Length: 233
Ligand code: 9WO
Image 1 (tube, rainbow, N blue to C red):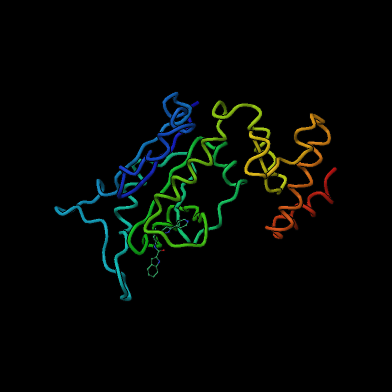
Image 2 (tube, rainbow, N blue to C red):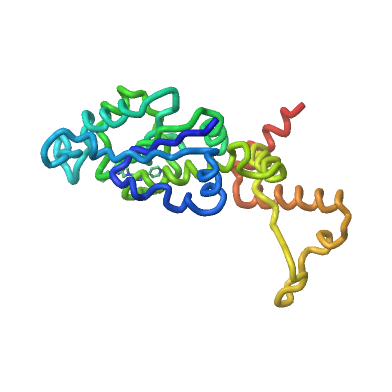
């Protein structure tokens, strides 16, 4: 079955954007997934098609109105998870991405201005999701990030080898370094073991490198890795 993505946005022309290229683009053409971008403005009810208003309590900027956002959601809501992209959300991880890829699809709400009226977020029981600790001008780029991460996990998008490789993230390790020809580039030699043809030695070297780099750069991931290795069967 086709995995269905719906994006609610004031900038529907931002989709599929970069996802029309390469892997995700081919999968879109071959109907492994579908994309519907919905303009929130189409659900405004006044002559000027107003979607925002000034914040109660004062302050800078504008807030998306709950009635307009709710009408947009009502037009598309079904059995799919409803996700609001916001820096206030829970951080998106590979585990969440896998869960979205296994759902029938996702409905993504992209905010603009200073935000979306909190009542519609709560009333619709939206999952609030962040891709990282920075403020952007809207949720569209995070929505593209979430879609890219999920679509590559859909059956038929990647080959079997790459799917197995994805598993490695589940083990909380960063990737080992990669090398290709030339074997000597500007005096920098590829690690000898990789030229040896000794597959067991290569696998051991890669595992050691992945562990070293994880320990060095991501003590948080390393702690998880050590904990899960300790409880592994
Ligand atoms: C703007 C702002 C201005 C003054 C005081 C507080 C403020 N908060 C915001 C704000 O969070 N604006 C958001 C812009 C409203 C929702 C859409 N926007 C957004 C989403 N920016 N960054 C994201 C985002 C989403 C997911 N992961 C990382 C960033």
